[in-house]
Image (tube, rainbow, N blue to C red):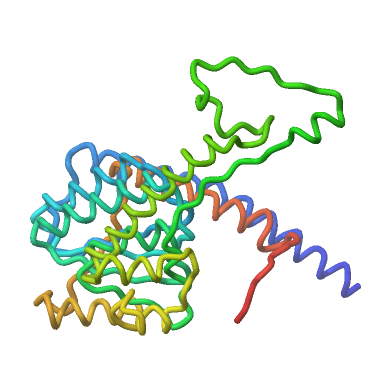
Length: 304
């Protein structure tokens, strides 16, 4: 009898939640419509604030992102920027593009402080170079000052399979590197020259950003990663800390008033952002209804 009662209560609970789902969806759509309408009319007047640019995952050449940084530099309401990084790096061109956009932001006269979180390596370290002050956690993995060019070579495998690749090129080096044949000595020399040039560009960025001699940076730029503590000793970062310490530095060194709000810098338009938030709210309601409350969950959590 008790088991039947519990089953009936559970079923009633599910029915009630499903009735409420319609009104939840309707409310989310109403908020989205109102937000989009407000965005199309120009939205509210912007107040003084700090911009937070979060760079996560692989860095690529993102035109919208660099344009958003440029707009923040021109916006009189933006009083400074917190660059929050958690990325293993990315393409050299992507890192260079964002580095240059942040350098122009700094040249506009507005303060720029970087906060390294879990990882800020390679191109992710590169983009921190325009910052006036760089904070890292003691356990942050950073550095990895270097460039990698890689390919694979499968000629022996193809030979075993009885397959041969034919290639016509306009020049001897046009097809280098080629996964279907070994890299020629001439091709290797050319690729190593490209690698050295890209590496030299990276070293110069670090030398300028950290006010270190290029020779000293070159000694550190063998591709290895450093912990935040090691990077501090090597003067690759300025201090140990996170966003609270970065806010305190902005208040003390850059006269940013305490309590100045922080707004995330998003390259999407206002209407697009409102729609994205609304969709996330809708998905959360659906997941809460059909999975999280009464269904099975498979969640893996890594704890320190």
